[in-house]
Image 1 (cartoon, rainbow, N blue to C red):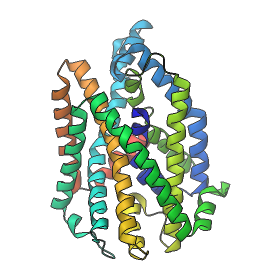
Image 2: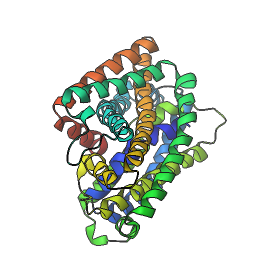
Image 3: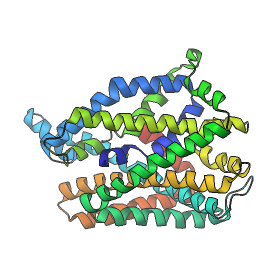
Image 4: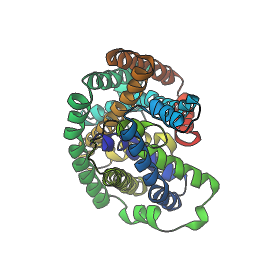
Length: 357
């Protein structure tokens, strides 16, 4: 359940739709699915297996593998780079997730305004406060530990996440342009394929399932020795892929129903969805539910990312878990706060973590 919580989140609800919208729809989806099946799933199994065998963080595992092969322990830097990339994602997650929380509250309170940000998120200072709230919740849950905090939270929220996602998808398909959305996402358009689309699809596949970034190496260390890694990996990748596709089928019918631009980029769900909700029957309620769903997904992922970084710091620097969690949470909060006032930083970190790494 923790592995599903780590992979399922804003990467599916926020990043997958805007990446698909910017990169040709079905062409992007085709490469994404092929990458999940042919590359990401095998890599995930490998990371979980190595992590469970070594019983260490990503850095510790790569160090020990290098020593066992007679190589320099400096190879541990490979795991460190992956852990750093995942941690940088956490820094922008706090900002985006704080925005998601604000939009959820705005929906339930009828605070959506056509062509403008909700009043509760209309200034950088208010955005900073929402980012602070989200990071505080994340740190508080991680401080409770893997079993009491993370597993317990995921066990309660993930079923609720899937139920809400399914209901909203059915609503969107019933009330939006379902045919146009299905054609956009699933009808083959090979002429849209390009090196840029392929790179974006590969980046999204690795980003979404959290492989290549050291997270699953670390989670493998906490796995039951009797667990079937192949089956667990299949459950994680299947759940993640289903959520991504359902998210696309939830968002794009509304986008096409109101003649909105699918290539809006990172602001797709924030710029277009509230406008659509304003034109729907019970739109404020639907909007509140939609962004609540996104907030739950964001929280499960941010918890996992902070725990990963804390385990690495605890192991390598020999500090207490509480010290590591509080320090890393504070640093992520500071970096996120800076990006609130300089928004271009978010796009640069997203590109670096999602495609370059």
